[in-house]
Image (cartoon, one colour):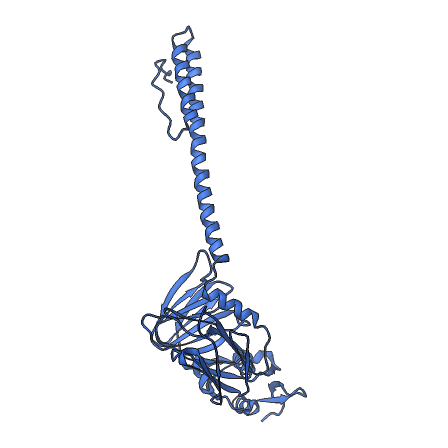
Length: 379
């Protein structure tokens, strides 16, 4: 083993040291120069030199740690700033979501709640609301017209469609929105310059009027749909574990987990595509589909393409605002094809199901409850 040389090399200048640390280093070098000429043994000189090097090394490490502590603090501040943005910055989507949350009461009839808190009941099962004169006039069910203030700060109206009802809304820009049963839509009392935005809970079909400089946004609790002019369906019921968009014309851009600090994703889809966001897994999947299966409800029928019986009955329960029990759970997964007319009277619709499935339905003493079961009469 080669012995370490007694000849001492100049002490290297440490990097990233404070002024105090540099002064201490200079003193150490001066001390070593003074002692180098004293009568120390080679072993003692080596030990003293090693101590000086160790001292400098520790100070370097402390300076290095200080740098990373400062870097970590900067990252923490950045994260806190991002969280602060998400918590305190109230964009239109968040404001509209808050407006929807305040309308907790589920009315018996379709209800239009204006920004000034006036509430208008729409008595028809298939109601209509049309905005005119840039939103200053609202025509309800083609029979009455009401006015609203559209000047000043942006205000929001809410259209609530309970189970068993449907409604068609025409906004001031000409965009038409078909709202399915059990849905809630929040939207500006009028559209100003720039983008157009609405917030949806439930299901709606959109036919958006093209406006090059004013993109149209549909917000749900976990998805944003951006379009310029196109037709598509959005389903975002609270009791479904997913949010879905089906595109019939044009193109749309989807953003999922919009309010997440990290992980927000954008996806563009083409006509004939269905995009489904799984809320539990936070994943988005797309597939080509027959769009009629998902949008035919607005035209008064259900297009069935290997649709499970349980899913069909769930849609009927929403559409007619009734409870439907399947007596034999084993039948829930049986699939069906074809078209099912959505008659005005649910009993006629259930009769249609009975003819094609061999099942029978019974109405319970409570007139809004039905039981579907296998026939006990064998052919």
